Amino acid sequence: MGSVRFVFVMTDATADTSAPAATRTASLYRMDMPDHLCPFGLKSRWLLRREGYEIDDHLLTSREEVDAFMEREGVETTPQTYIGGERVGGYEELRERLGYSVTKEGETSYTPVIAIFAVSALVALAIAWASLGTVLAVRTIEWFAATAMTLLAVQKLQDVESFSTMFLNYDLLARRWVPYGYFYPFGEALAGILMIAGALIWLAAPVALFIGTVGAVSVAKAVYVDKRELKCACVGGNSNVPLGFVSLTENLVMIAMGAWMLLK
Image (cartoon, rainbow, N blue to C red; front, side):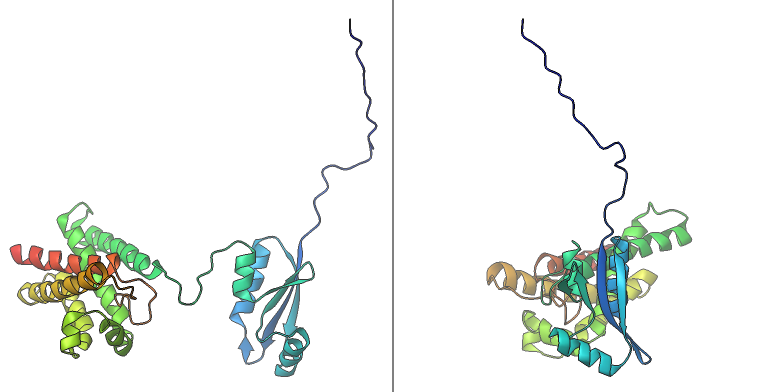
């Protein structure tokens, strides 16, 4: 028979295995002057606290202190965060270091479109509940589509000049008659508002049908025929939404709404 060996391991009975790990610390340098409190500094502090960091918060209370700090550290902006003695950088770099998503300048983003359609859906549900006492109605869908049209128009109307410039990159009618680029957001807003109210449908429906049809044909040609990679002007002239499915959907919704309202 084989022999059995017993191995005894000596342990320190006084060791506290429940002791917490060392607290993570970070140093933050941010502007806190009488005439300017840096918002990115506040955001950086909030992120660090959220992630459980103990913060050595250095306030730069004068222009002289800010300039001296930037010259000493060889940086051009504040705030600046340091973790473990290593400079992380400003707010965007800190977000990236902590694992949060960061949208780079010029990077494609569908966030504006998602926000508009989500809010439009909630507004439609609210209107339906307040006026009909239920959300299970065809009118709810109509309010959703009309509200989305109106909110998309608002995005364009914030800067009509920028919108019309981007719009000219692909819209077939605007290329032939430039003023159409200025008319489009007003027409979209008018059609959407009238459809929400259920008023003057004889005007709202043809406007929606016209601009929706021209827009759909223009987008289809630019994206699917000419294979061009362009930014969509659907949420304004400074958006990073790519031209394609979103803009085509916007125009198809207008066509569907215009046709449906006329048939009703």
